[in-house]
Image 1 (cartoon, helix red, strand yellow):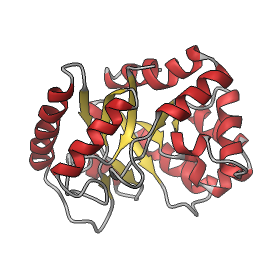
Image 2 (spheres, helix red, strand yellow):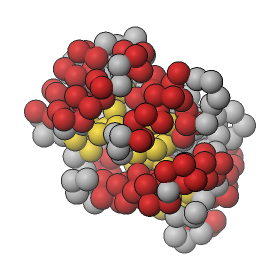
Image 3 (cartoon, rainbow, N blue to C red):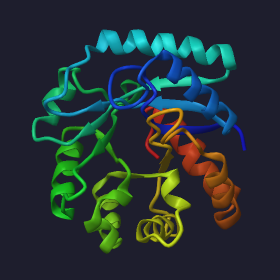
Image 4 (spheres, rainbow, N blue to C red):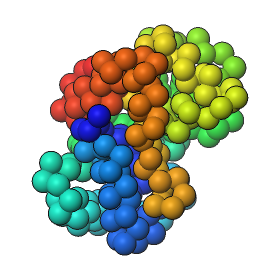
Length: 240
């Protein structure tokens, strides 16, 4: 089961509401490794009004965290991006290099406010696509408009967007959001899974139990595709 990729993780120290310091970052790395993760895309928040973290500083932190990962295993790989809260000037922020694409590819991880309507999400993702970016909708299960009508997700995919859901959302019992996640997986409408982890104690990078359940339910090949094959193609700036 080892060798999977987490494309959504708040593990960079001291830059958002994720890891508060390098000590917690190292604990998160250890947890992630023990959970079978071997590639992590670090996605600190980017949103209007937040304190700007210069790209040079983020790259310094990436190097520092990468060195810590290498002490665990030389094959433990880390990449950098942002989780960008959609706003109307997102394209200019990307072009200026203030908001980051994933690993300097055309792929961007984009979130919306939980109460956003399908139409608002569609328009925002469409704007990104028309500007030449490939948006990945972060934690699709958070948007009630989509949960209430899963076919809306297919409309976003037809538009050219990709879909990410959180691993933790696939294992909660008696949850409408969990049911929604499994509907999407069954229909082939999930392209990426992530932990969306924010710490070592709460919202930690737990993956193993969820992955095992998904393998049992959908087969190892299906899980490999969305946790290894698709992420590797994304990191190489290839179309999925």
